[in-house]
Image 1 (cartoon, rainbow, N blue to C red):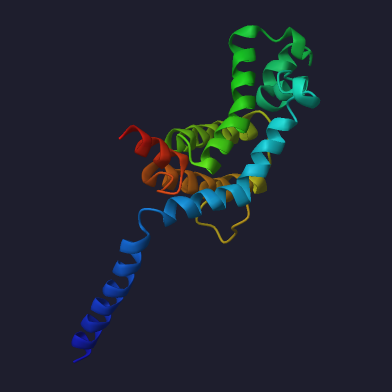
Image 2 (cartoon, rainbow, N blue to C red):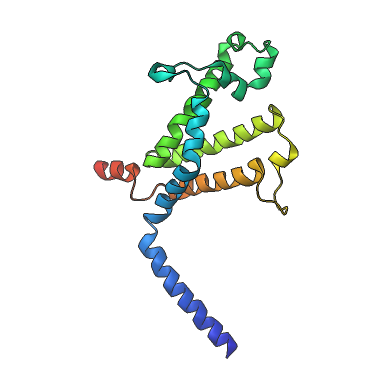
Length: 189
């Protein structure tokens, strides 16, 4: 009797949540993931990128020394903390790419344009950012944290794991039907 009751409850559970999934699967997960990204990470990325550029509209095209100190600190140290002495190839390219990625990819994710590729790019960026934080900026063990411990507030292992999971959902599921990706797809076909 207990097994029959458990079976009926499982059937009812599957029926209710199956209907919810069926009605929302094409639009809600991508929309909510993009909303969560915008609410939690958009301003973070835009502010971070802003610290690397000059002032005003023309400043968008002027990468400042601060960008080098944030992205390739050990290289700047090798050149006597003079960012102007850092070789163009590959470092100027790396710094420019890292700076503009922080502007462009988050905006593309929020509007739902090239969402999967943008999210994949930000996963790579987050992994590189974490590596640089650990190896070049020398963050402490508390900031690095650890998985499967009793703490959930470390910046790298805890927070960035959640960032990557959110971005991975966008890579796997896409932006959803309420996105520019869908608009472009419909325009083509």
